[in-house]
Image 1: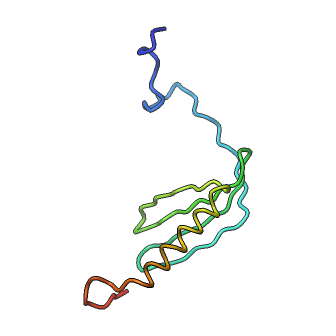
Image 2: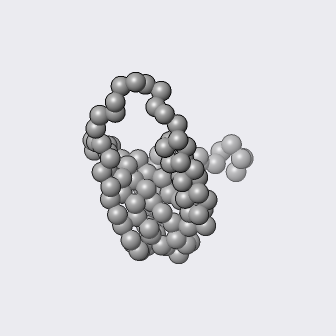
Image 3: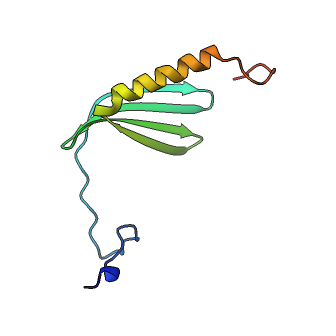
Length: 100
């Protein structure tokens, strides 16, 4: 087979092809927080490849998710703390009060 004849991994699957079997994930802890009109679900999970944090944003029925592997959680926490500190130190650019 010539290299440009291989099926793309990004192409849609036809009904005749089998999908990958789902990977077993165990939920270790889950918490939800509501901020304005958005809900954020933090779920610590584990599968055969390791532990990870799944952060899901639900805004009006639309969901977006990011996954952070456990080895990166300390760096993620450090950066988040830096962002919070900077946000607390800098005054808002607009003069109008924030409404929620």
